[in-house]
Image 1: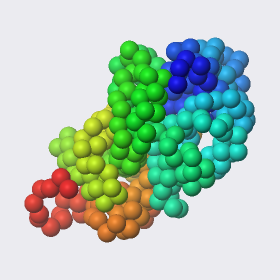
Image 2 (image 1 turned 180 degrees about the vertical axis):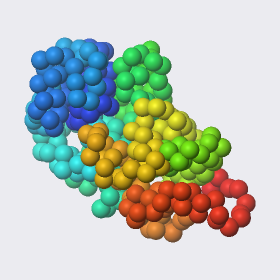
Image 3 (image 1 turned 45 degrees about the vertical axis):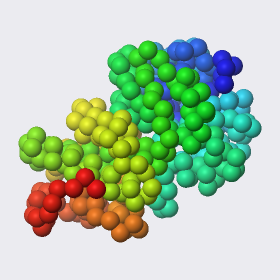
Length: 338
């Protein structure tokens, strides 16, 4: 891919801004698309995204814009970092201006609720068939602010084209940001999406005042549900024991910066979902993913009891303590990791 690299980052939330910072700090010119005009102004005038990533100084190699066309035009790498529920609409706009041969890196973590499609599948649905070989997925345990603070971080970049993955791996790699190569596009995406639902569950038990035993049980059995669905969808089980699986799962379930864990804590303390969501502009992807995960469980006829109980708490008014009780009172069975 050489050093003649120009990047368009689509989505200026905390993670999109961080990836722009990462690439811009390496000297690559980056055009960052933001939905909010105030974010565009904050970045271009003050070199910071005050709304989503305050106190992080952005290099002059980054230019913000409110035009998707402007962000994509001339780019040979386009990074998609929108919330999952707007990905299809924004990707359609990207497709209209995408330069021939540009590579697409998907950093969105979620599942489209209406179709139950993964992010790469959404892109394949709205973009040309030629884009399929130029798609890669970036995921792993990575709080945005810690990346920008230079804390050592490791992620995985997966794609069907090994040569493309290797080239993109070098683009993103820094001494503090280690990028491993992979090929399991489905598994990496499922890990990044489903761990958010388990994080909601662990937050709920924390909000209820339950202990570390309960949290450890939820993380472990939640991983089993992730593997179970992954296998049904053609993913490799070992993917879920790597960075995009257990790595991201542990971070999101235990880290104080986790939005999904924080939402779960509030639910466990008795707050309503509506009230919680009104208080924040950031997206807790696990809320939407819970419903999608249950839809996939029904489609593939597999058991995902934690996902089901989280969904019941979120959308059916089930009391969190009752959901925990029903999980613990399920019929006795052998432990399995499948």
